[in-house]
Length: 79
View 1: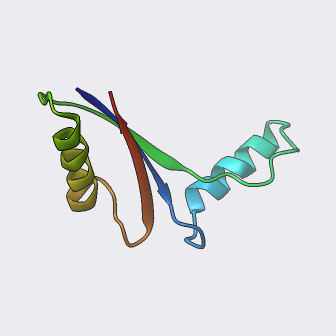
View 2: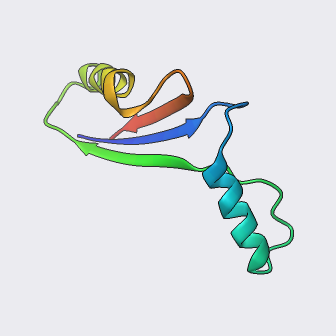
């Protein structure tokens, strides 16, 4: 199975990298960009046939290692 994981900063958490990207886009002529929030995308392939077990494993992976749940949100889908 493959998990596709999206991790983003929570609302209200400062995102200096997103601000830098927005500024660079402005310098490139993209004047209509108002805000940019930067995040992470992770794919994990693992051997599991049971979808309930797979979802539980990915959720645990995110909570224990992949996401800092104090400042980040995560969502995932398992295929």
